[in-house]
Image (cartoon, rainbow, N blue to C red):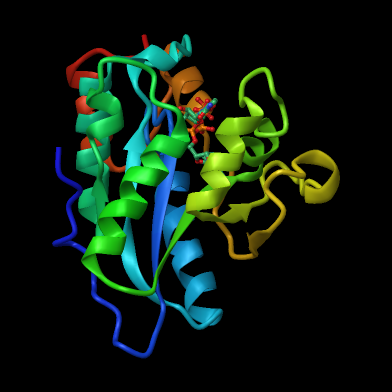
Length: 221
Ligand SMILES: Nc1ncnc2c1ncn2[C@@H]1O[C@H](COP(=O)(O)OP(=O)(O)OP(=O)(O)O)[C@@H](O)[C@H]1O
Ligand SMILES: NC(=O)c1ccc[n+]([C@@H]2O[C@H](COP(=O)(O)O)[C@@H](O)[C@H]2O)c1
């Protein structure tokens, strides 16, 4: 499967282009995931980058988190949500693979495609501080996985639930992080699933077409 580049805005010849990507379960995608992209774009523009756009790569079913609904549903919901965002595409390769895909492979694949697309492109993983912190746990993130990931991208991170890890203590392999200051909100997929289980409304937690899709397919009951 080819990496799409048609949705990206090419950088002018004298500027470094920033391309963002998000990994995660997206079970389901929420407004926080969408806000995360917007907040990261603002931060990178302030830092002088030309923001080309980005990708969202939902995890493979083989990630085996109990909260995952099948990838076909998660991809469909991401597709519906991304209608609200310009220049961000879904990279379906990870979700459609026949195995668990370590995140460095997602980054490596994007890195290779983007290097062929234009010169002077910097790839950024956009994430919350919970994901960053998890990379300090060698039981879920083998050392080599983190080292390889770091070799393909930089990190742009939003503090979550008031936590702001000390990189040198908590995730020394990552070394350097750009912090997002802008508001993202505290939505989470867990909260959406809890509301659905209790029969409560999830309006304004995720875009309306995603809500309709969830009800139509009777997900997260
Ligand atoms: N409210 C938020 N603030 C900052 N980052 C967030 C927020 N919600 C999600 N993220 C980030 O989005 C990425 C993908 O997250 P994921 O799909 O696991 O969503 P989640 O809401 O954390 O899911 P779950 O509640 O099922 O664990 C991760 O980097 C995560 O930290
Ligand atoms: N070794 C690795 O590359 C590795 C380990 C654990 C989680 N992950 C990824 O991190 C993300 C975590 O998502 P959740 O926060 O929804 O669990 C997923 O995309 C998952 O594939 C990657």
